[in-house]
Image 1: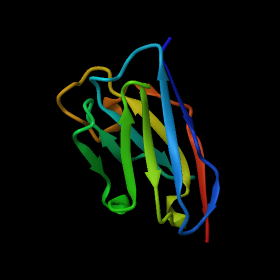
Image 2: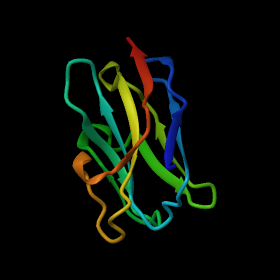
Image 3: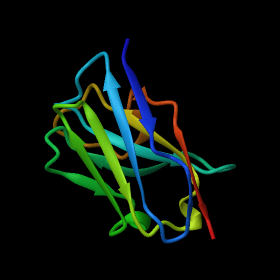
Length: 126
């Protein structure tokens, strides 16, 4: 059984930092893209960041460029999202996702990811 388990979400003040972790079990994703998505209350799920299987390529939504960094440790089967200079508009449930089909292309589309975590709440107060 494949599981993705996120951790690290909590309440933080604007300008603060958080690091989210996503630990995968049941299969290795070392050759596959992994992504972070978020969903704010009343809004659709949106792409935040993605990383290629090797970790050499990373992609971000414009609103987080320069503030968030995605990384992975394939030996630990874990992906991270370092979030700095947090803003109230970053408040959302953050989801980790794995794409078990692709190894070359790193997608930004949630429909291309077939494994999802349960989500972790990030709340940024002003």
